[in-house]
Image (cartoon, rainbow, N blue to C red):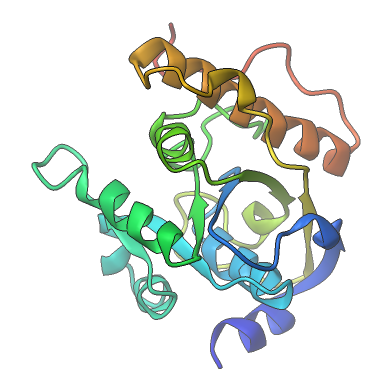
Length: 220
């Protein structure tokens, strides 16, 4: 009642390869992150392709006017950083997967800081959940939400009407990690594979060549 009318009103649609989205079973959807508008616009795409997205969102977003209401309405899982409750979101995600849920991850953990808006180095939560649960990881790339609501701004720019582009990739092949202990190096490698898959889809969507290596905000 809220997300779909807003999405239709605010943006035009360029949705591709929705046939790659599994309609049943627990899945992990890994997407790039450009704007605070992402959860709303991407939720519409996923809902129209048979999945109710369970969003992992920074706890601070639950306090943002309107957006906080939207993520709560989507049954989002809050992510508490730097606290004793930080691991709770992964435990709750694992339970949702067992129940057949579609967990929407932004592996970067925040909107990209790459100057050209390519995906950054990812955090390992999605990879850990995938390796521990065996759930498939579906890479999704999108483009256009940042034009509607640039990162850091609270007031959207609805005119002229923007186009929200989405493309779904094939499941990320994580078979080489099967049976391996989810130690730090394994998780980093698996995360890099996930981010590479998202970036490849975004390159196709943008019609551009992606950088040779992802932007690392830590400068390492």
